[in-house]
Image (cartoon, rainbow, N blue to C red; front, top):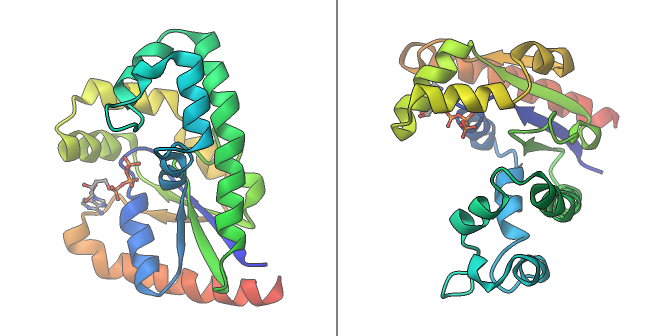
Amino acid sequence: MTYIIGLTGGIGSGKTTIANLFAEQGVPLVDADVVARQVVEKGSPLLEQIAVYFGQEILTEHGELNRAVLREKVFNNESEKNWLNQLLHPAIRAECLVQLQAQTAPYVLFVVPLLIENNLTALCDRVLVVDVSVETQLERASQRDNNKRQLIQQIINAQVSREARLKVADDVINNDGDLAQTESGLRQKVLELHQFYLTLSKKK
Ligand code: ATP
């Protein structure tokens, strides 16, 4: 079975940036955010179940999930949120496993923003954390989407702490440096890890 590297990091830490550098080396990616959208695709059994429970208004006129409406329904409603999570989380986990196991490359990068929060570390052979300071997170995430720093701070507070993430890490890439100056350094670090993971994957 393919060796699985879980890639995680807080909001705005640079997971996508780092994942792309691995992809340049031909490493396949499984992205939990993409899977989370796939399991509730138009016409999927799960979306059907959600519409039966919350009402047809959670569907757009094209039969797709209307995320804004669903978000409103579970906002500040713990029991509705739990119902939804208990339906979605096992389905997302199962579909991630299917996609991970379908890989034929020596190893796969499993990109999961909430790897620790959602207990998905158990699926991984190794965990790689993209680490930055909270200040860097606030700066980059607020710049990217023109978001308020306060909103980013709330999201940071809802995620596990930097320390908790580093505790779980087998490998760490620090991404505090400005990309303009550190891109070659980052690429070098990724190349080193890539070689290391290729070696580890042979031993599995
Ligand atoms: P999220 O979980 O919020 O989607 P992410 O962890 O995938 O974020 P990226 O999207 O890779 O993070 O990076 C966040 C933003 O910061 C992007 O706009 C990206 O271009 C920028 N960025 C990433 N790394 C650096 C860096 N080293 N220097 C400058 N900008 C960076």
